[in-house]
Length: 358
Image 1 (spheres, helix red, strand yellow):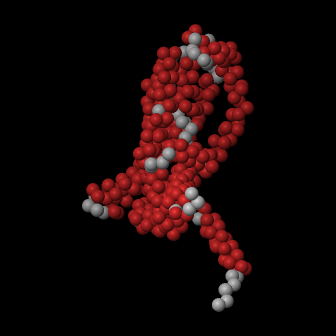
Image 2 (tube, one colour; image 1 turned 120 degrees about the vertical axis):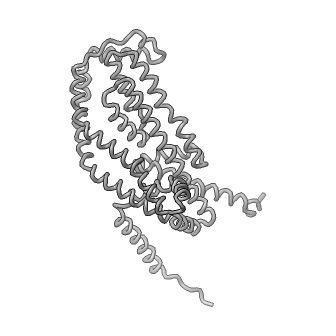
Image 3 (tube, one colour; image 1 turned 45 degrees about the horizontal axis):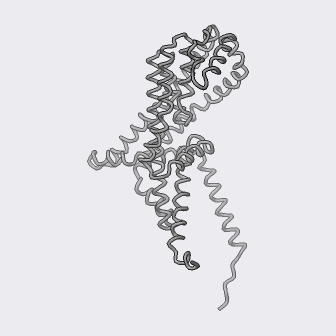
């Protein structure tokens, strides 16, 4: 019987056509990719909550979807929009405060600063130098960067409308996914099974758990840190405590932490001459800044049974590679790769051929 000859040109053109079709489809859907990913992350993270509402609303999925959509608007979109709007609204006040700071006189460091272990002498030296130069000297060092920072903020302000549109598109897509979640989950499981059998299904399941764990760890930790930081700033009497709390929330979600707000606030309190409240805010800030070291891992571990090192590598690497959305994409990619690698190793250990030579 003659062996059928493979048509190399036909195969090559077929693969090329499929590749071009995939690229063209992604290019057409490019404006919707980011909102779709965000909606998918939200839906996967909050799916148990949807089922709970459905069970307590007479089994009506439509009512549960309406409640979840409203909650997303109230708990996610509205706070972020208010934070952005607050920052934009107080831009002039921030400039005015910077101008006022130029008239402040920094007092010399108190004696106890030099007695601090390890950093005392260096801190006292820097403090004394800043007091000698005055605030105008410090502003003179910062002023070369002020123009670039101002241009960046002006450029970002023009994209606020686009951010609003993407947020609302995310909410609409999330509502659609809530309505047909089982169908989408079944399709993903069938796709995983088609790629790698039962191990593909496990990878899809673990990817969903990774999304849920990271969302729980990152989201809750950001809210707790920003909330406690804002309370500390309000107690001490730092100006624009609400604005700074909104900034801290955005920084915590972006994995930059509240230290970029808390420690400058501590310096401002010391600068004002109130060393007692400054010391209180310093200790309070250290607690708030370091609490994510134990709160976030505990929350992530509850959501996904994955090595914490793998999760953290995914969060940080995803953030650097893909931006804010990479916080969720990174751990999912590593979770899927980790699952398939473990399955491949396990299959090799269980295969009889692996022990024939021993």
